Length: 338
Ligand code: EPU
Image 1: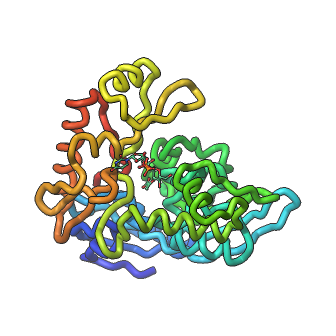
Image 2 (image 1 turned 135 degrees about the horizontal axis):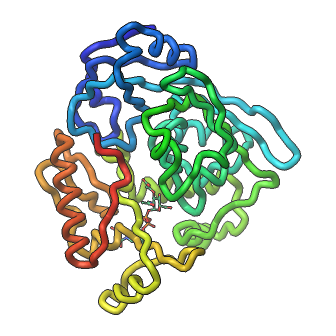
Image 3 (image 1 turned 180 degrees about the vertical axis):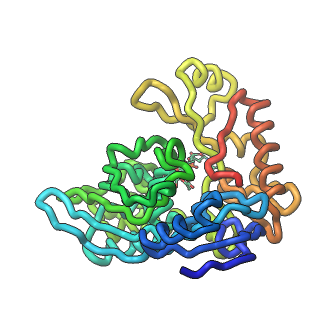
């Protein structure tokens, strides 16, 4: 086990924000976690688990021991009659893993193409896009308990998945480290095409029954057209969750803003498009300091070059205040502010 000290975390967060880790250990196996826990000094120091850094806003140096998850490996575990079971190490890059499943003829994750981050981070916030959420494909998650060092498997039903939420963000936050994720890809494969952007692709191409590889390509091109590539412009994807309001609240807002983008939910509530709310407040393309609102999608905050975490937080607060002032809705950030 190699213990690194004074490590810059700038290359390890997709926003490209500056922060230092006093101590960083790369985790490539369950045994590595146990070595850290058994270490005379590190064992007693609080731990901070870092995945692909695609869902954090670093506003300060990290005093905890940073455990950088680098568990590799991807394989078909089992081809059952009703599903393929596929496994990936938590340190695998999510978009590469999804592309690999498609190449291997294992369809089911194509709608989740190109989401930045690692496999291990995917269940934490139950990533979702174009009508599919990770919870729809998750079979089980392997974790190591950060107190006892025990390896445990959590069946998907125990992960308490919600909209951009899970047990790993709640009760198990900071208490466990995800090492591997297994996916259940149902057979026969059925494309999920209900999302407006995908319906447009069907109309454009005239392909009504696309293959998984075609859906994968479509999702990649839709995302590239409106979401910034973190390797070029620092960002953490959608910065705010889409807020959910009651039917009465929704009707009240529609009365004042008939154009508002809203989607009925199965429980009678309505989900509003946070991007639309922010856009309506005139934020698209605006900046505070070196942090800005992306020109093509108001839900994405970007690092215009050299921003620090405090600038991102200031911009986020200003947006929250103006959306609250106009619509009476409190936007909740998606990334974790450290
Ligand atoms: N809109 C605007 N102005 C904007 C942005 C959006 O008017 O600046 C409107 C759009 O016209 C559209 C609506 O808002 O009618 C919704 O926008 P979009 O379809 O782009 O989806 P979203 O709600 O912004 C969500 C997820 C994305 C996911 C897409 C596709 C959240 C917080 N975001 O975005 O997830 O890729 O749907 O399924 O749920 C992420 O979480 O990081 C992420 C990128």
